Structures are given as C-alpha cells and as structure tokens.
Image 1 (tube, rainbow, N blue to C red):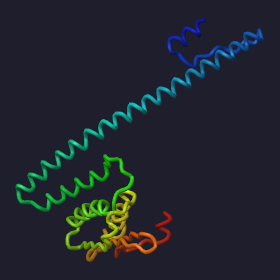
Image 2 (image 1 turned 120 degrees about the vertical axis):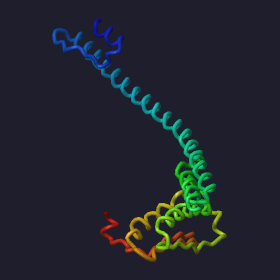
Image 3 (image 1 turned 180 degrees about the horizontal axis):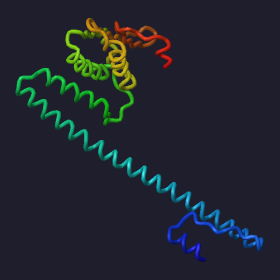
Image 4 (image 1 turned 135 degrees about the vertical axis):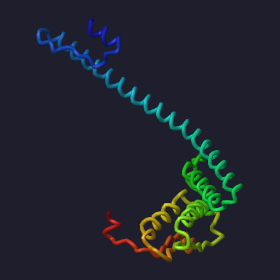
Length: 205
C-alpha cells in the first residue's frame, strides 16, 4: 500500500523487493514492479515528447520573429547606405537579404524555378565579387527557355560556393566561375571553375 501511494504521488519506477515466501504474492509483486517500471518509462517518454514539442514551438516562434526583425534592420541599414551614396554597401545588403530569404524558405518550397535559383546565385556572387574585386569573374550561359523549369531549391548556389571556397580562394588573379544550363535529352546544369581542382583522395575525404 505504501508503494502504491508513492506511485500515486509521482514516484514512478519504485519497486518492491522479491518475495519468496508465497508464489501468489511473488507473482503479484512481479506484476506490481513491472507496472511501476512501465509507468516510469511512459512518463519519461511523454515528458521528452513534451519538451521536444515545446522546443519546436519555440523555434517556430523565433523563426517568425527573427526574420521580420532582421529584414527591418537590413532595410534601415540599406536606406542609410543609399542616403550616403554608398551603392556598393547598399547592393551587398540587398544581396544579403535575398540570401536570407532563400535560407529561411518561409514558403516551405521544395522546388523553385531555375530563374529564382539563379537569383540566389547572383546575390551570393555579388557579395563574393565585392570581396575579391577584379580577381573574380563570373559568367552564365543559360537557355532562357528553361528559366521556368523547376529544380530542387538551393541546389546550385551551394555548388558555386563550394567551387569558390575550395577552388578559387587561393587563386591570386583571374578566378573564374561559369554556370551553364542547357538541355539535350535531359536538363544539365554545369558549374565549372579554373581553380586548383580536387584529387580523388580529397573527394573521398
């Protein structure tokens, strides 16, 4: 009875010592212990699920608040940059805003048009060009008839970023990236650069 009262008070998982004097009482104690441990396991699982749900709700709330605040802040900085005649800074802020919008994906889109994906690439490369200056050159060869076709979102920009980080950052002059979008039997998107390249060993790593 004392153990039952403790369980009622929330002490799940409490168990009685084994009882050898009577088979029926021994079976009853085993059943009681099994029930108590089962209650503890269920309570811990439910608690963990509630914590996870709370964290998910908090993250969802933050994802609603933070983008709004950050976008407003960027707009204020952009306005000040334009008023000061600093068009390079203004362009970088606008490009950063486009990149943030792409990353947040508030519409929860899995597929976007090639045209929209290339806007993300353009925004990223504008920022990169401000960093590298005349050292960096970028070209696109895109069949305009394909711009409305849909592809997985943010599939091209990370490849371009990888080409710059791993292939071009060490190149002092004449760094180049070329993006080609063409179609034969299938649509093909090619990202090429004139960087140092990668060995098969590096690819395996």
